[in-house]
Length: 294
Image (cartoon, rainbow, N blue to C red; front, side, top):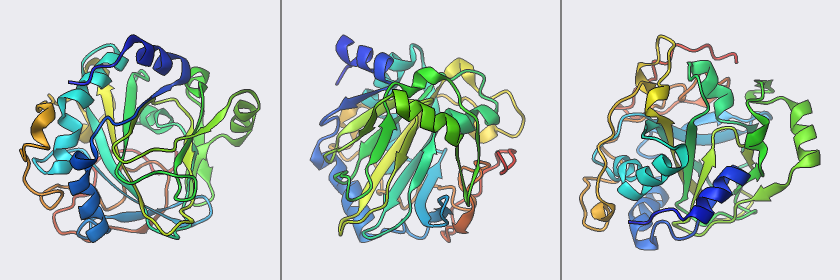
């Protein structure tokens, strides 16, 4: 099992993120990569949210974890153990999502912090993180993620409406960029990056002729479950960890055919305008109980 070194843990504490090249082998990622290329709507589950300019960003989240490949990845021992190490305690699955940028797509993710939204869902402490796993190569041209290094130390920044979307307070973002370094994450297939829930991040348009897909798996500390009502989908549930060899041993069913996605209005209440809901019959709307006007 791949364990984090003390140097990697220290990088996460200092920068708000740590990159793990080759965290997954190309062979482990290939079934998901091939399936996403063959069916870029994920069987109709993929939905489109507006960015601040009204351009479409395609994404589909899920909180339940099936025995499909997309449900196994967030439960792999190496993934969960690294999350536990960085959180300093036992984690549980908050949600995962597939974020997809098709060739030539104009949509961007505006600057934001994840905790800027999760705070409003009743999470008391920012003891949360996400691992972004590259399903395709991530480059500047196809819309890789950018972050403001060490911005997690700024604490939670207010978020609000930004055009058709939602994002971080612009004045504070400008001040952060004056003092802190903006970094692009250029990733190879299988590379992973764990990042703090208060790290400022964004991503650009895909101006290339290649798709860019990332699977994001987010975790919360077990003792940090939301206290607000209506958050059953995000409440603590035990995480059934699976061995690291589960992918290569074929210990999964389909890639995503049986997975229940959230493809009505996103994992939302996050303030993004829905441009297109998913059409897959087994997808379910979230029951978050949070206003969409953050």
